[in-house]
Length: 126
Length: 126
DNA sequence: CCTCTTATTGCAACTAGGTTGCAAATATAG
DNA sequence: CTATATTTGCAACCTAGTTGCAATAAGAGG
Image 1 (cartoon, protein in one colour):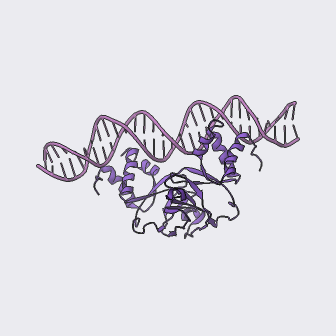
Image 2 (spheres, helix red, strand yellow; image 1 turned 180 degrees about the vertical axis):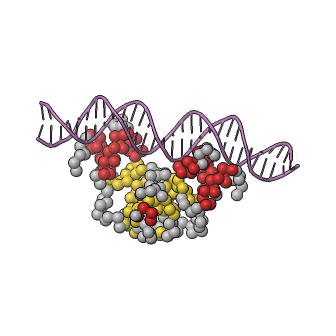
């Protein structure tokens, strides 16, 4: 870990993820820190967290980028994936703990798989 | 099927999908028809095709929207999904014919699932 | 605790995908 | 052939995300 300085901004962004296990979109995070830092800074800090393996990213239903804390990202190297869930009502996103086997495809080399489940979350199920 | 007029533009866009089974991003389609129609028109025609069930859409690796011809979209109603593949080298996208079971998630109602596999396609595998 | 180097930040401008409102054009029912 | 409702072009707009550069501030080493 050569670079990565402990700036005020870095600490603030990390705190959000440290406090809960929710996934956050960049849009939310920019909004959340408006006033204390520039949106470019948020983007760059998130990029760094991702490179450092502290956060993983995935795309939500509208192609928006979401970030969530990594628990065992590097451990099970690309054999299984954990899918993500997004609620069609409230938009909330969750990491699911179940594993999904990546299917084999003839004449293709699969490196990575993304699975997004859409529906209603527990709170929106009435 | 109340609306949907057979205009020149509608015919041109449909021809592209009719000729091959490839998936196309909106960006490609807009580029392809630049000169003969406006980008807004392309977007709107694709929207209509989707609503009419002629095309299905999904998001590629950068959150770009892709369109592909529907073969049996309405037949197997949300029990299985067919995943999509995108090549990390050339960017090409394919519909895969394999079925993936949608996992059950406690206290959630799953309506839909998207799976995107990433890697190298047959042509890019050397 | 000071200094120097280098990472980080703010800002403003920019890119790209996608959308909207409205007037003009054009399918098609009758 | 006409009337009407759909479709189109255009220009302006929106939002997510990026870039270049000068200013700022960690923190390593003295």
